[in-house]
Structure formats: C-alpha cells, structure tokens
Amino acid sequence: MTSTLDATVTGTHVPPSPARALVCRGCGAEYPLIAQHACYECFGPLEVGYDSAALARVTRAQIEAGPKSIWRYAALLPAGQDPATRVTLDPGLTPLVAAPALAAELGVRGQLWVKDDSANPTHSFKDRVVSAALTAARGLGFSRFACASTGNLANSVAAHAARAGVPSIVFIPGDLEPGKIITTAVYGGDLVAIDGSYDDVNRLCSELVETDEFEDTAFVNVNVRPYYAEGSKTLGYEVAEQLGWRIPEQVVIPMASGELLTKIDKAFSELVEIGLVEAPANGWRVFGAQSAGCNPIADALHRGVEEITPVKPTGIAKSLNIGDPAAGLYALEAVRRTGGWMDYASDDEIRDGIRQLARTTGIFAETAGGVTVAVLRKLVESGKLDPDAETVVYNTGEGLKTLDAVAAQVGPTYRIKPSLRGAKEAGLLR
Ligand SMILES: *Cc1c(COP(=O)(O)O)cnc(C)c1O
Ligand SMILES: [Zn+2]
Image (cartoon, rainbow, N blue to C red; front, side, top):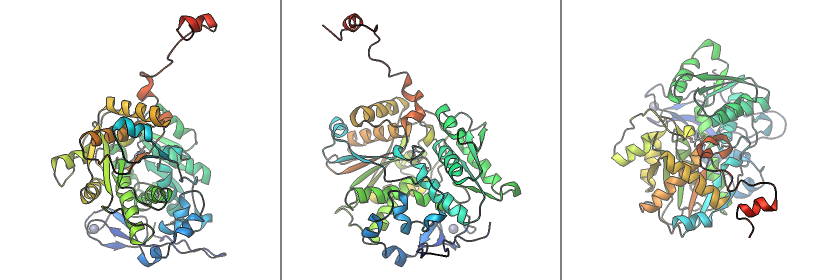
C-alpha cells in the first residue's frame, strides 16, 4: 500500500485532517501518512504527528457541538473528519461514574471516579482504537480488516468489519476465554486460533502482513498501528470534558502493550498545549496496572532499569497478557515523568478487585478492571497514590466476557423451596 491518507472529499466542506506525518518515537525521522509502523532508520515505532496550528484552532464549543461519540474529537484525530469516511460503531462518551463507596473502602478521601469503558458497543475500550484504525485503513485503500488480539480487539475488529460490510480475519491465541471467542465468531468473519501465546500471534501477523496474500489487509495493530494508537487519546479527552474541562490529578490505567497509558497522557498534554484546559497546579500523575502473571513494564520500574525484559504471560488477566509490550518504554517514561507509579496484582487480588468494584459501584468489570482496582488498592496502601487527590480509574472491559474468573466464588445466597415454608426454613422469615 503506497497511497497516503487523505480525508479530502468533494461536496460539502470537510475540515482537513490535522495529521501532518508519521514521526519516529525513537529518532524523530518523519514519514508520509502511509501504512507503516516502524522506522527504517532505527526500527523505532512510528506515531502520528500533528500540525500544531491546526490543533490550536479546535475549540471547546466545536467539540461540545459534535456527535455523542469519539467523533466529537475528530479534529484531534488522524482520520474520519468527514462522517461518510468513518468505519465505526460510534463508540465513546461512556459514563464517568462517581465511586464514593469504593473510595470509602479504600481510604481515598479525594474524589474517586471510574471511567466505565465497558459501555462501548463491543464492551471494551478497543472500539475506540479500532474505529480510528479502520477509518484510516479504508482511506488508505485496504479492503480486508485484521488484527492480532488478546480477545477484546478480536470482538471489535470483527464487529466493525461486519458493520462496514468488509471481510475480516482475526488471529487469537487458542487458549482465549470462550466468552471472547464466541463474541468474535458470531460476527461471521474468519477467526484463526493459533497454538501459541499472544506474542506468537503478533509475530506471525507481522510476517503475514509482508506477504502478497495479505497485501490488501489492514492489521489494526500492525501495519496501521500508528492510527490505531491515536484512538486511545479519546479516553483522555473524554475524561477532561466530563470533568468540566479539567484534568484529574491522578489516573490509574491497565497496561498490555502500554499504549493506552501513553496516549491518555498524550491527550492531556495536547489539551493543555492547545489551551482547552489548564493543567492541575501540580500536574497530573499517571499510574499503570499489570497482573503478577504478566508484569514486564511494572517490573522494570520497580527494578529501576531502562529496558524491559519480555516474560511468558500466565494468569487470568488474558486481555493484558502481552509479554513483550510494544509501548512499554514509553509507558515507563510517562509514569516517571509525571511522578506516578506502577504495580501488579495476583489472580486472587484480581478476583477481589472485580468483586469489590461490582459491590461498591454496580460495575461488573472483566479481569483487566479487576487488575486496575486491585492495583489502586495497593497504590493507596503503599502511599504511592495521594488519597486526598482527585483520581480516575479506567475500567476498560466487561465482566460478562470473563465469567469464569469469578464463577467459583459467587452464586445464590440461598437455595429454597417455592413456598413460605421454604423461605422460613432458610431464615428469610421468622
Ligand atoms: C487491550 C486492553 C488494554 C490495554 O491496552 P494497551 O493499549 O495494549 O496497553 C486494557 N484493557 C483491556 C480490557 C484491553 O482489552
Ligand atoms: Zn527512527
């Protein structure tokens, strides 16, 4: 694919994309807006760079007048300025839920919020990145959609492809939760289960993308990854807008590749740079959450080292099980720069986190949400997180997809015969 991304269409006036180039995160080399994810000079990952003057023209009023989805931020994204060009389920504007009962249990005195991104169309934050990636991919001329997935991405790519009427082929590790296999396969695209870990799946996809048979195929997190990653920024923009154009002092974010964390931080920086919000007096602090079974980024922070040692993931938080995280170094950088921290939770702590969030907020999270709540607890206990500051915790996925995680621990409180006598015998009546 050599065509460049161009949102220009005829007819009614459509604002141009504010994206300027792909920029290497390693050496700063620049490339046109094509389907490319690594730098030819240093092999560093490429990121979308913007025309700062174009971003600076964006106003709060313009955003507030936009659609009730991520597309209200289209003027801050690389593609999709013209609604007709979007490949999307219109995700976004998910609830920001006050969590006073959770705060009380944890000893948090500042305002505590849960950003509940399980409310997206396929029930995880991945709809944001997939809408961004596939909209760019269609603009670049691709005719088949694909991904390497730990589960939620598979759901979202298959559903987006179904809505757009485009064929899809999704690659997953064979041992994924049944809840994530069914919720992908139902959309009717091809689903390839691979005998191996996510990291094996990802490596295979990087090889497939170079073949003639896959020349027409956009892998959302491989060849169009720079555009994919930008979709995560909307989780930063949205929280700021929902707080009345304010940035919270602390955010706690689950990490797989680490990309989501870096992009929420990037979104806050952009909002300050273009003058849409003021930074909190002491800045914002970014906190990262992993599981004990897959903690390469948090481990590097704890050991105080500059490189990430890949691991072989284990444990129930499968959606976060990336052993060789592509954006790990950038997540480390963001956490160090902002004065945050990272921690990780065991499978038992993850289960407790899921149940505590459900009990105190009415939000049933998947294992990734359990990781984040469990890590929030640890950060409060260790004093790394200021209990008096305002904190937003990101729940990125839905509990119905990972029922097995808590199935052995919850069930009916009573089992009774269908009569008053039965109720009495159980102690429900005197
Ligand atoms: C993919 C995923 C993440 C993390 O994404 P990265 O950007 O790779 O760090 C977090 N939570 C859930 C539920 C996910 O599916
Ligand atoms: Zn480079």
